[in-house]
Image (cartoon, rainbow, N blue to C red; front, side, top):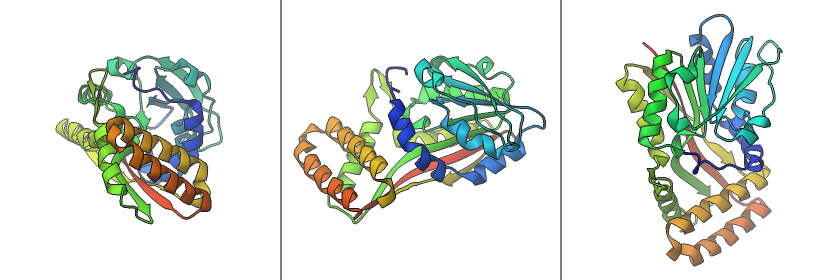
Length: 269
């Protein structure tokens, strides 16, 4: 898995505000209600620099200890404590390792398990292992910002639906012998938790990007179109024209986009 999840710190910084706006505070509150009383120990999977912690810690009571899991030690080195709902700084621990090898003992003592923008870059086997580890802990699990594959531009362009379909095929590709789940990940996750007898709540959590998000909008669009071309090189000329047209609209504040995600909370019976 470490060969696939290669994320630049600059991209994580660029998207953090949009992520924070999109995530479900409703599910965060529901997670807090289901955590046991006392000191919280929260394991954040694929944490990067800790954006989930910075968003969620102020919504949860303290004291809190966050265990940040990521294969990229450089991203973990950039993580800084956040403040809990009582204004106290969180304690932060880091755990470097491949989430494909996650075991229940890696989540020992967890009162909550979280992840953000992770599930869609996993395979079925990797996701099944993570769900199995979460179920073994008995702690509620909050997974945010899993893409669904739905992208809606305003105004509409004839290329939108074609490129959406090709992009989603790219997200489901086989990469380094790993068959990625892409936009099927949320549905698979729900099924795995329900098969284990757990309850699941799901909330749509879209990015809504427009004139005030020009840098993120342009960066996201570049990556979206690049994935389309990688998946189907024959579209390269059409994609270049599309990108130029949409980039001009972004610069002039003439276009918006809704990029659909789902947040889900799972908890034991």
